[in-house]
Image 1: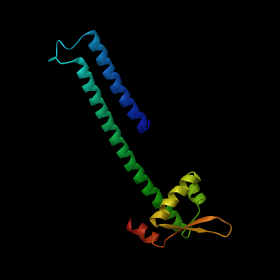
Image 2: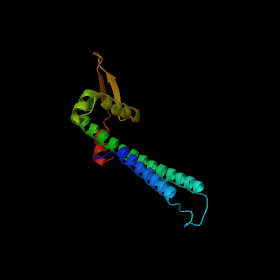
Image 3: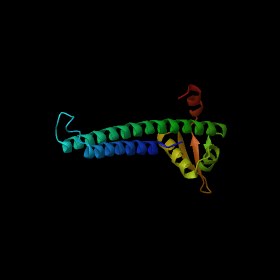
Image 4: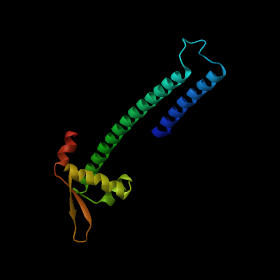
Length: 147
């Protein structure tokens, strides 16, 4: 399956190729005789501007959709982490989250850090220097209510 960026690049490349083909054919068989007139340079500039606007809109909507999907993905991951914390007595290490969700430890730490900022979890450091994420007791009520 192709990623969204590859699809976007292919669409942009196809539009540029179509424009180049039309431009090349226009050099061989001028369309000015058949159209209502006007400068071919002006028509080319208008075509390029239109192509730029269409490409920009495609890119904008693609990025917006990608951000929404990423947001939904993170919410689902955070809910899984909360369920894991509930099963383990409200305390987790980043390595446990990484192992349970098959993530890199850095990614697990990033998500846990976001949860600390949101107030879902707090950080405790043991005497040995290990970082423990403690989750609020309200997790159980949040999971039951579906929030």
